[in-house]
Length: 383
Ligand code: SOE
Picture (tube, rainbow, N blue to C red):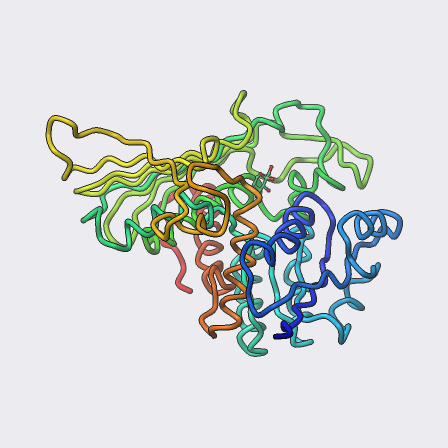
């Protein structure tokens, strides 16, 4: 039977442009569906660079103006892979043109902007999703399954951290290609929006919403040369952020992120402690889920390390890959996201996180920055 084309227009060609495109190319081989992804067009202002990207990754055509791309009749879905300050404008135009939207995280610069994006996609009734990819690492998806099965019992604690070290050098400039994450005007926030956003998305997905929190941020390097102006300018982003809070289910939240943890490249860890079970996961050992089950026999009760690579339905997504015991990687989380998104189009049950789901993360991010500024506990706004 002929497959339904799913014609993608990609905006951006950086790290995430490559990660998403790789997923579009892989998905049909490993997760066949009624859809056939077609890499229709890639778009960026720099014509030479976008042509190079399109040639390398197999896009049929290029555009240098995203407005033209979102109006093209031969595009079904727009993938937004550009700095955060452009997400809202592009999403609003894509929704108005009836396109499905796959938006890189975080959804927006702040919750007010995110809310407009939610309204736009819901008004236009276009499928939408945000690329919080870590939900779809099989070991993380397994943790969610165990929680949903009620195996943990009452949850007491959720803690997560995301540590990196790539901005320690004080002469690293801010702004422009590759460094826009340090520029407040392009990013909207620092490690809170870039790294903690991932931790918060996973946490809310697994453990429900958060009621209130208290946060502390620090900017260790106060001024950096700005690549776009050529001048030394104030740094407006948070270099590090720590917060604790309370989930609606009564459990306590404890989160940390920084780009100043020398030696850590992308150390995302999460742990959840329930009355019957604890779970721990570490991105540097991503195929393992550490499980402590209090119901185990006393003499052999202890932490076990589950290698989440069985190709049975017990281990999410793994039946579609290799043979038991063989690991997959970071890139597969994006492939899983496309697979789920396409399955959602077919079933009418949209895969998350939708824009609405991601707004909840955005409200927590706003509360973090408010709390750090006011040095007060802050209630998290309601979706
Ligand atoms: C920052 O270095 C970064 O690339 C984030 O932007 C990504 O979202 C994260 O997954 C890895 O780190």
